[in-house]
Amino acid sequence: MKRVGIIGIGTYVPDQIVTNIDLESKIDTNDEWIRTRTGIEERRIAGEEMDTSHMAILAAKRALENASLQAEDIDMILVATATPDHPFPSVACMVQEALGVMNIPAMDVSAACSGFIYAMATAKPFIETDTYKNVLVIGSEKFTKTLDWEDRTTCVLFGDGAGAVILSEVSSDRGILSVDLGADGSGADYLYIDSETGKIKMNGREVYKFAVRQMPESSLHVVDKAGLKKEDVDFLIPHQANIRIIDAARERLGLDKEKVSTTVTKHGNTSAASIPLALFSEIENGLIHEGDVIVMVGFGGGLTWGSICLKWGK
Ligand code: COA
Image (tube, rainbow, N blue to C red; front, side, top):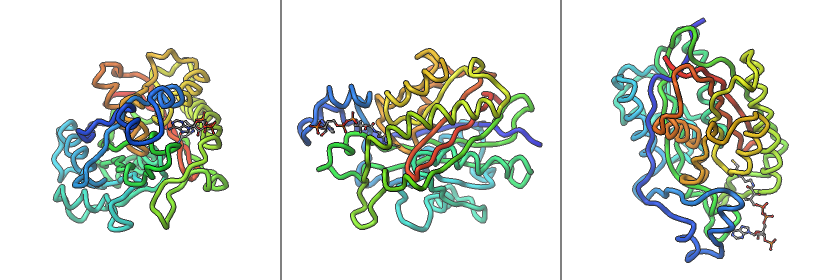
């Protein structure tokens, strides 16, 4: 069986930065509350003209460039998003059109903030079995369009952005070692977008309890499935929702702070885009090295969770 890994990555975040202090003048909140409860300091907000597909296309072009591939080299497009431009056509079809690659399969994957992990897991067997060579996997969200700016318990948490990777065959000692996916629909009411208002509704306490339990569980499980021990993990890329949830996972894995991405401070929660955005940041920071064992782990609406353990490099 072929080994599947990341051969290129690209991201896009909108230029507009909104700090906690900026929010203080808009709603009844304060910088101290947001920072101590969530770790978030600022988030990016996309303008009217920029929807989920536009950010996805920009990230995809950068990922192609990073992989030294042309658009026509792509054999399949998967977009993880909870905030598509339309119920259909999918964002993936809009990306396909913009890239000018016709007749290849393109679809969106709906697993909320776990979506990027689900999409990577969906792509993997197509490459392993030689059905497709290069799969473009994107997480893109304009989450701010779902925010109710009257609801301070949710509107301070989210931001917009996109991240894309190209998955392809890599050498036999690199790439994805194991995958762990799961869902518990009994928690559907804890986090959802209301179909009448289009706005997000959340039971923060219940989501918090679920996340501090499930994110470490899934991380440990995927490491075990890879035949490794938690001591073998070099870097953790968790879904960026809340620094306290990230700390819980970090502690269960016994990792030092420097070995865990916390880009939630500058991006807020960008849902399906958060993991590729965090991964890209840590690559830019020079913290991801050839041969490192990396665990990427997400959780979110559904409720869903998912993790991937991979050995970095081609
Ligand atoms: N600014 C100021 N005060 C706020 C506030 C805000 N933005 N939002 C809520 N508060 C207030 C509440 O009204 C409450 O006041 P009260 O005690 O007078 O009623 C107080 O802060 C405490 O609220 P509470 O909900 O108990 O806070 P918390 O410690 O549970 O933290 C979350 C709230 C949302 C940060 C936390 O529950 C959380 O992170 N949950 C998970 C959310 C998540 O990750 N969602 C995405 C999943 S992908």
